[in-house]
Image (tube, rainbow, N blue to C red; front, side):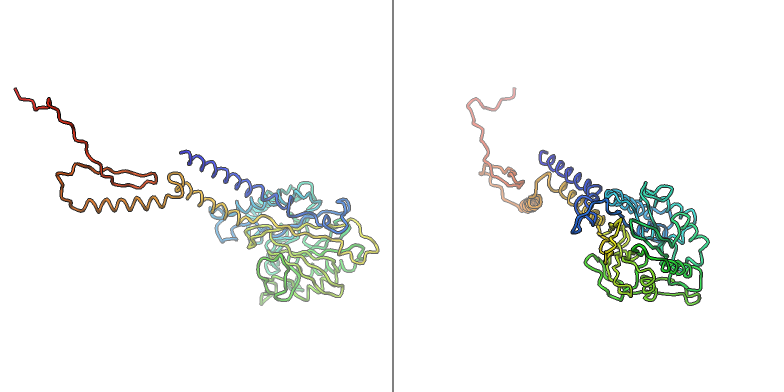
Amino acid sequence: MKHHHKLTVALCLIWAATILYGEMFAFWVPSLFTCSWPHHKSDGVESDGNFTKVAIVTDPQLMDKTSFRLSSKTLALELAQFYTDINMRRSFFRSVLPFKPDVVLFLGDYFDGGPFLSEEEWQESLNRLKHVFGLNSEGRVGDIPTFYIPGNHDIGYSRVASHKQGVVIDRYEKVFGVRNRRFMIGNVEFISIDAQAIDGNSKKDLASEVWKFVQNVSTDAQSHPRVLLTHIPLYRPDQTPCGPHRGSSVIDQRFWRHSQDQEVIYQNYITPESSTKLLELIKPILVLSGHDHDQCTVIHKSKAGSVTEHTLGTVSWQQGNIHPSFMLLSVPKAFHRNSSDPDKMLHTQLCFLPSQLFIYMWYLSLFVMSLLALLLWPNHGISFLNNAADCISNVMKSSFLSSVTKEKNEDENCEYEMVWDAEGSMHLVKKALQTPVKRQSDKPLVEK
């Protein structure tokens, strides 16, 4: 019982430490140990007052009935939604917000089946999104300015969006703002576009609206450096290396149009022509994108010069990337007029979130080990299996001895006694019988 008590206490302590780490401490690791604002790591360390700190998140893709093609109220779907939502909420509140960003930027794909959800289902997913990221009625993270760009899972590619424009586009813009916009952060102008429509049929409204916006931006005097925001990454040749942070294999270009209206059905990169045109007209010093669910850093060449594009990985552990991430961007509040390389003043830092899959695998492994320990340890320690084998052997020997006929020896005054040793083994020990001493007075009584 003493050993059993010690084992129980040890397992309780191990489980307590495991649960605390997996459910709490693991999400504090990025802000405490593994990540920091990139301007803190620059050669000339500058104070936070010189930079606007931007936290960037992409592709949460809240799971819904389109994720597994299950009805909305099935147990499997509700469990998946619960554990995915709670993981992203912990990641955002315990890993991202502790950095105290001045601005939060979302790069699209907030829902999984946004264009195909009914109004009621869309509102339910929107309420979940607000809960996960702590969005208020104005769509802000508390009092932090928050900006959004659309993703293909929010409004669909041009084929879907053009056929559901009156519903899908309207309800998106009502909550998240216009799809093509420009805004200032620090001393940098951010240009966000509806990348899902840019390669659509140029004669239709959605594509022409995007290009009209881009043309207007290009004709304005560029008094500030620009950053291009696009959910779908710019074109890159097949098998272009993505850098050391890439976890999965590089996906080649995939692009399909509908045969009749020439609208886009699917694409994983913007076409080469549109990519080149965007870089030449907007002249960004940095491009940020999502959509790929995995990290990728590439350098594009254009007439305006070389431009770095960072494709961010998804923030959700259920979207094919077991190492979810987010990005910290330090935007200077002022540029030096004589600075020939303003792009070098923009600092980025990729930060990785806890791997929820590994945490759950450790829970399962610890459960199995705990179960085995409770079954095997308390009675006989690690020699349980050896003792069990000895017991089985002794039982077989006893059965064999009992089956053998032995001639009785009347002269042998002895008996056999079963004795167990300290290890639990049984032995037969021959023991002599004590003959009672006969006395003279021990005479049989005569019946009267």
